[in-house]
Amino acid sequence: EMLPTKKQLKDAIPPHCFRYNNLYSLALVARDGLIIAALGYAGWQLPTSNITPVAWLLWSAYWFLQGTAFTGWWVLAHECGHRGFSDNTLLCDTVGWVLHSFLLVPYFSWQYSHAKHHGKTNHLLDGETHNPSGRNYRKQFQGFYNLVGEDAFAIWELVTHLLFGWPMYLLFNATGARRTPQGDRITTVHDHFRPDSKLFPTHGGWNFRVMLSTVGCLLTIAGLCYAGTIFGGTKVFMMYFPAYLWTNFWLVLYTWLQHTAEDIPHFGEDEWTWVRGALCTIDRPYGVFDWMHHHIGSTHVCHHLFSYLPCYHAVEATAALKQYLEPKGLYHYDGTNFVVAAWNVAKTCHYVEGVEGIQFYKSLKDTKNAKKKN
Picture 1 (cartoon, rainbow, N blue to C red):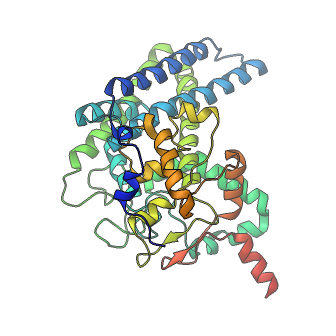
Picture 2 (tube, rainbow, N blue to C red):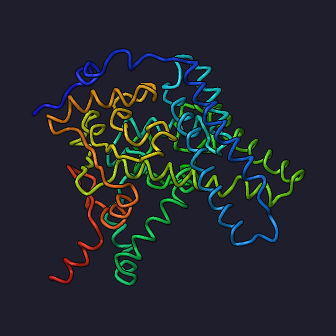
Picture 3 (cartoon, rainbow, N blue to C red):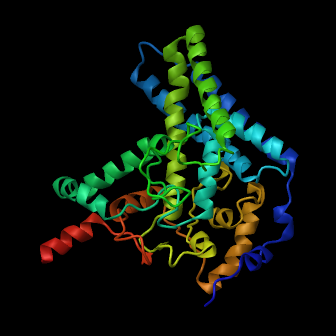
């Protein structure tokens, strides 16, 4: 069966779902800000010395909840980068730059690489973020896998992805594209902070925006350091950094689970098309976190097809798309609890055999068992 065109997909969604409401978008920023402020007030009351076990539990709860709340702002800034926040570009970039800078995200730099992620979804050469590893991964980690076993390796996968994955991507473009925007082999570090990074086009049109992105992050770091001189470094660290790590956890978890499963194909250049790649996205349920994060995880198929569609219309638009796509066998939904889903992905989705044709994830367990049979 022929895949639908982008026009056919758009026609399946009620037209009003594409209309912006700038006041409502700003109200969502304020909503998340009130939650963050309330949690911040509660966290400020906690001690930073002579911490009892109960106080440690309260700090842990604060870090998780605040990091979860920060992620609401993170998603809204991400919407700004897609022009899904407003039809006013200046408003999008102002709100997006402020919110992402506060969360140490280089706004314009990541806007560029994330646009590549959407433009080349599940493309094995040009796809950005969670682009599957190749056979070299098997060579590097098969021995470690055999030594520690399936479950311990899955834990290692979860920790490396959810704790280190985001900074490794920003600093080194880990799991990013296999070639430069010019189609050349990658031979240098592709970071998000230097205007001359080969991650960006060589014509230099992005130089100022990349510099502004880096300045935003540096201003946040400077602000935190200055606050530390007033309120104490330990206090500021405890209020911000662990919560920031939880935000990183959420954003990596979403991106990982939205594009990774044993039955989701990835495509070589000979097989990839934009619609084909975009439709290989998975919607998943996240319970109350779905509300906190503006339904980014449960409406991601819609988001990849129409990233400029406002997030507050995404639930209705997803229902319409599901009604259109599901009879054709083109809608991917996995109702597995997201914690279980992450565990399954960490155990089964490790690498692909090549970058040509249609590839599906393989597990290092498959290789180990194949060797035993031989």
